[in-house]
Image (cartoon, rainbow, N blue to C red):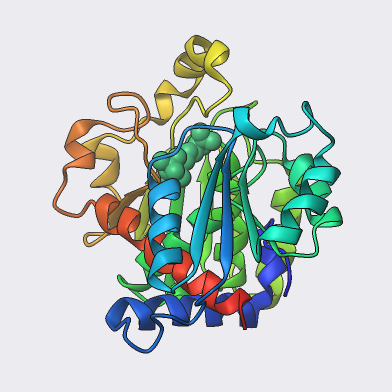
Length: 302
Ligand code: CP
Ligand code: NVA
């Protein structure tokens, strides 16, 4: 069993297989129900969550495993005791440790100390479980290796995972945002290198029209991520030219779909009209968080 901190940890074959298990168990759960009977999955949250908390807990139960949900103030990761000690204790009780944390380095420490697989449920650096649901949602619309995906706005954790997952799938990922809010240079380099081998393509631009032209998917996420609340006013000012409006969305391909990981800040990164557009897939995408986490559990469980 391996850890899942960043999308490339799965490898291309693993990614394909996790997505196949997600789609197959979405079609018919019968053959998979009980596949993890008797196992215990820890779900730990240092930040709020609706989709991740509920979809992961439900997927765990569907496979016959038992979820144990922990909140940050109960554990005091790195405060009440060292992160590594938490990893070395919890792996004595639990078969898998899934963590949502502020600092990605704490996941790295967990993975270094836990004998049980560690799964990233969102960190400041990445949100790989979200990217699995994103790929599943795009694949329901069109073949991944033909998809042109325009991500508009803040080059954040969700953007990072989408870039890496898209690159592994042979998709074209175009990121448009203002100076100072680009995705991390190391992520751009890694995604570009992966894309070079997969037939995918990575583009980072300030020009929103260039990113959206002919795109099959228009994707955005909040401008102020959890933990960045003190920067909200500056972020709104800098990112407003990148708001996804109806006019912008409709300048993409005629059958383009709109995606957002949610929660949305309606009227900031995207208008209500786009969220409620006939080609918005946001709630299918949210549902796919459950199917894709089930696919991931099945894959990691062998
Ligand atoms: N998309 C997502 O991770 O949502 P939550 O923060 O509600 O879990
Ligand atoms: N970028 C957002 C994603 C929430 C699911 C955040 O980190 O708050």
